[in-house]
Amino acid sequence: MAKSEVVAGLDLGSGRVACVIGEPDPEGNGVRILGGASVPCRGVKGGVVINIQDAQRSIRQAVEAAEKQAGDVMVHGVYLGVRGAHLESFNNRGAYNIARTDKEITAEDVSAVVENAKAIPISNDREILHVIPQGFGLDRQRGVPDPVGMEGSLLEVEVHIVTASSNHLNNLNRAVAEAGFEVLEAVYSPLALGDFLVTPEERDLGSMLVDMGGQSTSIVVYSEGSVRFTKEIDLGTDSITRDLAVGLQTHMPTAERLKVEHGVAHPGLMNGSADEPVTFKGLDGRSERQARVAVLTDIILPRVEEILTIVGETVQGSNYGDVVLPCGAVLTGGGAMMKGFPEAAKQVLNMSSRLGLAHSGIITAPDNLLEPTFSTALALVSYPQSSLYRSTGVIGQQMNTVALSALSWDTTVEAQP
Image (tube, rainbow, N blue to C red):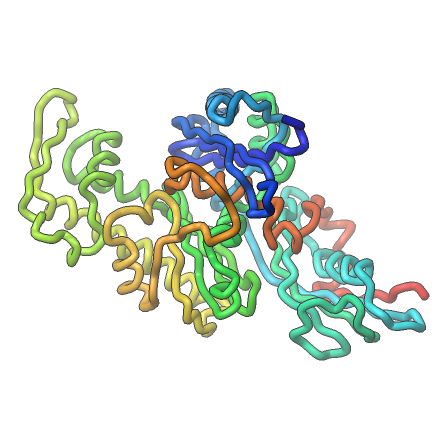
């Protein structure tokens, strides 16, 4: 199979690393998934590399296993998902005067106004990952979706900008390189997931993606067809596992198993199982202990409520706290798969909530790869064909604060006639 046909997505989680390999569907139905694999991830915590050697070994194992599952295809480059507290985002705007006599807006003019919007002073230890146009304006008229071909004198754009720590990105790139692969592009994972799981109608009417990771929780707010707000919360569902380990006096792996097999995020869904006993090993690894399902639920519920409350307060405290989200919350990530999580989110966030499922026309994949473990990797494989990829263009380059200090946050320059 030709190198250019194969697309690989690599998701580095704190608990597992997943790789999925695909190719463009010959019938035009998105991406056809060839294979995938997930292995325990070591050397990464909260989206940050803490041990390059451990991380690169995990990456190599996952990609090689995915290559074997895909029929021994060779992967050379990957779309790498990044997330974690080192990601920051904000909105900005730019303007561009059209001084030509014909006044017709070209694709080059659109590129120029977006470049102006990203010309902002940021510290030289940060890097721009994405610049996402939210909407254009022409001669002070807002709400122009695509100005190319129209006439005007002043072209404006509003954008959403995502930045990352250069050092953390470099460490991720190094771990992938030492594993023997090239990073084709680093992609903010929740944005790729949004195109994959949130329908165009939901993005247009107003919705929120909540990605429940182990070490962090990611939020993306959509309205009028575009990203309006993103935020990383430094708290994930691993905190539930720790609570269970402490409360039940058992090891973390055992607590994780109990969470997955018996955890309930909403008391109304225990369905008479509250008094059922659960048996597990104690801290010494030999003695057996028992607890009722109700005891597990009593430990789990406060942390679920805390995480979801922080999500709601974060959105309410943003500039988009008053934006109506009639389509509610789309939940994804391993933590969201706990029984009753959508019901808990509906109650705490006071909006409709559903689990994220890939909408039609994006991928064709075996059932075993449609599990939550592979959601982000699947989204990354689909990224080159997504609206996010088309809207962001190339990765922004690192900007020097000194060189840009003279630029305003709303920059206007003139096009040459």
